[in-house]
Image 1 (cartoon, rainbow over the protein chains, first blue to last red):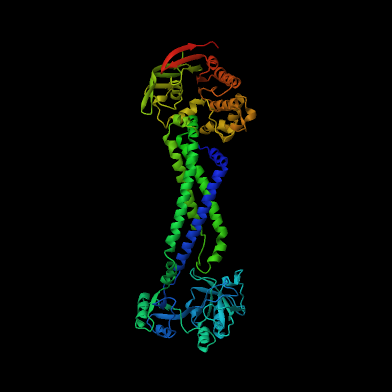
Image 2: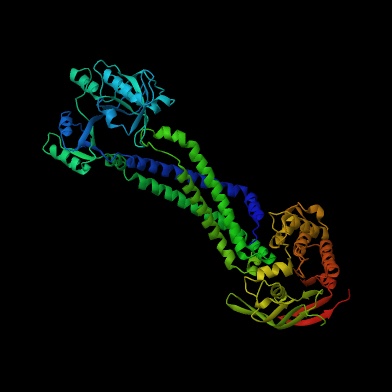
Length: 405
Length: 231
């Protein structure tokens, strides 16, 4: 079939304003779609990348109720438990409240050993890099109560730019110091996450430093652990270990709820409702409305060109050529819009990664996502062109020629 | 009749509009010789345009048969007709029916896309067709940049671009002033006399009809007058 491509291009160029607005609408819809899918995928990736041999023990009452520090020794004795560490939300900020980043107080002798597959130490105090860096950081973490390990995002980001050896004053919002001053931490190591669920903007500090400050009255607060992270032996079923931990504390003083790390990660997602469904619904609604907008544009174009179909048929073209012209035009419009939308998503990726750094660790406009967006755009154009071009197949040349055009 | 190039044998055609059936052609018998220039006249609804549509394969008859050259057009399927039209018939319409988004040259090149010619050959042939109608200097103009007479001449160039044997012209001077109409009629006469095109022209214009070699008059679907005219 001979196809008058030039005619399709000329039609597109002849209605610049209408087609331009349609392209703009599609590009915004595709950008939103990419954004929403990337957010959902980022959340899901965080859950997927959770260790299959790690449990999180929290208070059965609430995540915001601390567990006694005495629980750790008891958990350590349970069959199948390999290593445990406290995790306590510290909640301080740097200079101003807007300069917030996550800090967790952990057990410094165990933390790095528990996270061998999760984080890579890329730089240690004294300038050590490579495989020796981990041991150097472990040593430095143990030798200074104020030692802290930070994610590479806190070093490289424009907001903080912390460097090894820096003393970082953090203003408390949960645990004020008795003297009214800021807490001070010294950076001894920098890590890079190896798993999507771990942010690169977290600071890990020593739990014993905080607890001892509480004990001595240096700071206001009580000794405790927010949660316990529990690495389990691969040989023991993880469900059994979880049951055993909860059974151990069934009679108090604080009952516990032990869940897998993946379940714990998904808890944060579900805590704000079924976010993936919510975001998916928004994305679907946006796409649906844009679909009708494109179909409407193409149908207006189709109605105006019924006479053209008659002329083409009189010249010897088959009716399907007019339909194909509209499909081709719809395809070009939607692919152009889709392409711009994808470029927009790529252009904003870096900024959105920084914005989401604390909440979504794997916001990414991936190649499969771009292909999906492009595929949806193409489908949109084809269906819209087809819907507008079907009347051409039904009309006779004489009827089409008689139409007002 | 020395040569039956176009033949309509007992052709009947009715249209249904708003639940009413209107018989447009009734057992029409008509033969047209190769190289003839026929003007069809008659009141509105007499069946003139219907004859053009049947000969040009744009419409099908209810009964009877339509032959053009060696082809039985009335027996062709809807899918066969476009290819046949592209090879054998060129259309000229009252309202020109050029595509406004294309230049004059591109409009003329359009039917050539259905031929095996290369792009360069198509361009050359379209330029030649525009030259025949005296519009070489308007090749890059859009229809909106042309006068009515010029538009119709481009439409004629488009109709002859594929070198069809038959040209069907439906009131080609209907939308033109006298001067432009005369130019168009002159071109059609030249196409008939110099290139041996068989022309069927519907017209309400007596001056235009006088240019034809043969005048047919229709009324209520019947041929009421058939006369040869002096050149």
